[in-house]
Structure formats: C-alpha cells, structure tokens
Image 1 (cartoon, helix red, strand yellow):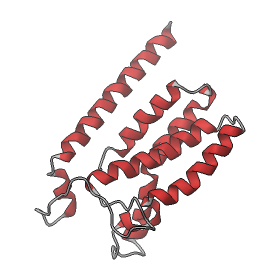
Image 2 (cartoon, one colour):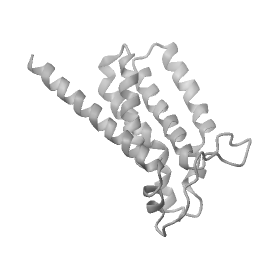
Image 3 (cartoon, rainbow, N blue to C red):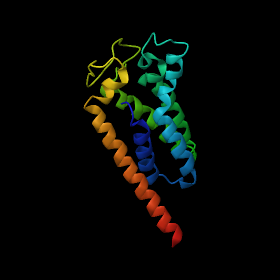
Length: 170
C-alpha cells in the first residue's frame, strides 16, 4: 500500500464507531484511528535520516506484526476488562496499525512470522521499470485500487459532512 492508509484508517474508524457505546470519544477515536493507520511508517524518519536507507523500512520493528500483538493484546484486554471509555480509541488505533501492516503485505515485504521465520510475505510483486522507486508504484495496477479506496473515502466523507450539515439546520 502506498497512498490509501489514511483512507482505510478513516473508514475502519467510522465503522468501529457505529458499534461503540462511547460516542463521547468520537473525535479522539478518529484522531488516533487515522494516526494508527500511518503510525508504522514512523520508521521512515529513521530510514531516510540516520538509517541512510541501508535497510528497507519494512524490516524495522514498527512493521513486525507479532511485535505489535505483544502490545495490542494486553492493552486492549486491560481496557475492555476495566470497561474503559478509552477502549474504542485503542481499538481504532491498534486496529488501524494492523490494517496498515496487512495492506502493506499486498506489495510490500512484511515479516509475519518474525522472529521465528526470517523471510517476509508479499502478495504482488512490483517490478522495477523506473529509476525513481515511487513511479514503479504509481505505474502498478494495484495503485488503481488505492485510488478507488481514496475516492470512495472522499465520497463517504462528503456524504457524512453533508448529512451533519443538514442535521444541524433541523
């Protein structure tokens, strides 16, 4: 996944909030949900600066699913047992972290069984046809799916804004 992480984060957070009894946490859930959808890419700061692009950023700990599960399972369990209103925020954040990693698996190499297995998984290989790596992704058929996700998200967002605008006038 190259461009649609935030769109997926918004849509999944919107869906999670439909089933939440903590609507007072709505704004926080949207903020942290969308943040979670791009959070694994925080490793790009290291990758482009101190890491000097020596190791692909999907090899960093922020893209290791089992490492995230070691954090997610106890945090979500604790918040749900305590019946905390923050549980919806944590579910949105961590759920979108995992969705990021799942969608990165489509064209990126994700190490699902790390530390037990060295290799990663990629569902679709992006061939190198251009010198600038970004063009390879923009020119790949999977990018059309991302554009579709982004356009669908814009449609849902505009529809939601229009509905809330009409509701506020009533």
